[in-house]
Length: 600
Image (cartoon, rainbow, N blue to C red; front, side):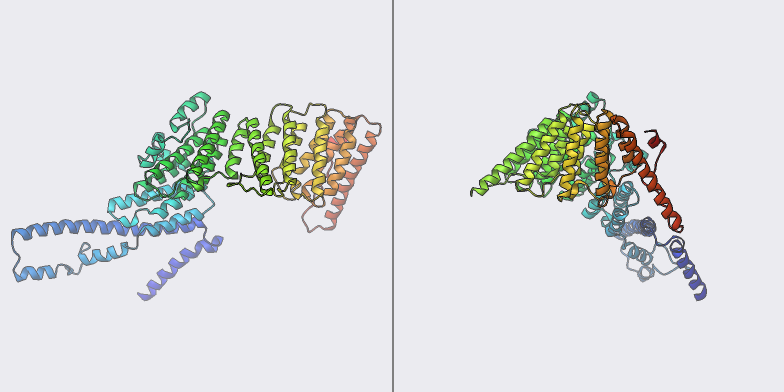
């Protein structure tokens, strides 16, 4: 018997170690699945215990009723009661008190922390979308607590907070698993996130001071703009978890509400629906704190996230106006004693971005310049020995770049000039003692794009303005502004700024197109030693060849042929190095010639 038991143990160990032998260590998903198998066994024990306990309770009720009718005084009855748990015919009664006690003793290992360990594992697992799994696990805990009357497995505050974190992290997925969770289980869309709790009731009925756009106006805006309804599964699931917390007398903290708002903020293509829902969450948070249902009122981070949702709503007039109302409301609450509501630079940036991104660039510029003037006036008074009670918020690089970007993207020819003025104001603000407010590669690239590819490209002086900006950027880079031409991969590839300026001269057939192309190609060659992205490649050489072919210069053919020979020599050198080092990976020239090169 000992030998067979040892053999079974070794077989079981080999089965457990098989995934490690085949593919290395267990993945996080494998560990979660094995842990769920253990929980299934514990739940099975708990249900057996519940069934036997209910059978014993019914039997005890019948015994008590018989005892009231007659007194039990005989010795035989006493002996019978003492020997009730003795096995009959050598078989232990599965519903006896001793057996059920042992089952209950094993079932006591199942509590809320066992489930919380699974929730934490889901929060650490990054390979998939675990939002639906987390919601199903919460449903399972609540269902088990209700059916078996086991308060020990009911979700606690930690359970809900971890679940909110998982839902928030997966909200940016377009193909969210929550769609299958809701649609697959037959939950109607109008029931999603509407659990009947006090949170949803208060958020629907409480208006922010000065607000004009409540959550009940969602259908109105959707009909007016023909906007397709987005279910917002992640945000509504987060609100559902928040509602469960309130229903179970758990007071959500600021982190819980921030997770809900972050879910709405990260939903792709949430647009107006997400903005309205986030706005309603903050208004509900205010009402809950007013009625002493939560301990902390909304702070600056909650309002800032709502402004960020509005800035991406795609509704210019509504978004800018609403963000301005929220900013005024925050200022009033801060003056009323809520110090943690005072707007910071992120709040102002969200409001500026909401104006600029939604087509109200002039309002965004006015707000930015007002911030600059207020801060510089306060700094001047401080130099004179007059200290303000509250220092105004200082704009940062994002504040300027947000306005520069939207002016550069404007479909009007004067957009580039307005963007240039903002860039000049930014540099002036930088040189006036704000060393950390510095331009980056986007500050120049947006304006260069406007004069070369955007609405201002047809202006006669557009190539000259773009070339002047590019020379200024290169000069500042050599003076130490390394962020203007970053050495790492970035959204704005610096080589496109050079090639777009060359192309702008070539398209208009400027006589200096070839000369400008050669100048910028030499600059790229010198800068390529420190910035890999600026090493001349086939695309850059094609732009220079196009410049020589369109400039009409007498020596254009000779200069173009000279560049073509350089490209061929580079290809030959790379081929020779590859031939000498056969064992290494084949190297490919970034200046390889194409058919288009010879045509030009």
